[in-house]
Image (cartoon, rainbow over all chains, first blue to last red; front, top):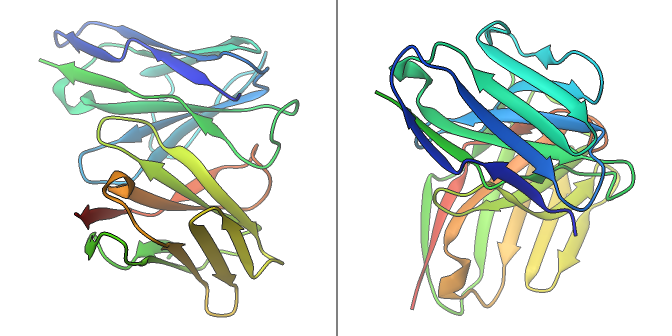
Length: 117
Length: 113
């Protein structure tokens, strides 16, 4: 149980375009989803936390108008990178937490590799 | 400032030996400490969680200790296998799974056949 999927797994886009990444909890209801970013040889850095049906809470230094997060249902959250630039190239990972499953930890998706040319 | 340090960036050990990874933290008071495994190009996979009032936890070949006085956790893999080769991340949280996780930079373990 506790499977989290992400789509797409890899995306290449031109500078200035927008990219949407989906995160789904497949076998449990995720009341909270988290979005992380990981640069090469660095650890995961939390970007934002979203609770179903409410606005996301962004970490300091993360532009909310650039990284749009929507958590419209208990099984789906989306991250849209707007007007992407090469410095946005990174590995984006979501995680999900649900009160109906293990309440002590988060379960991570497989990640999405974004490359902005 | 707050820091989570994993003592070595890389660790090589011989198959069959016990791997010991260290996680030290400063200026945190975590309620939980967790260990994850991350393979290249993949998301972290949850391994073990230990609470602040627990000293040790085991799961199959894995053992975690948590010393809140030393502000340190040790992660052991006994009878290591080449398939255990991966990056291992420690993460702190101030509460249950709905709370933010703060990650260390990871230790890349290579088990040599």
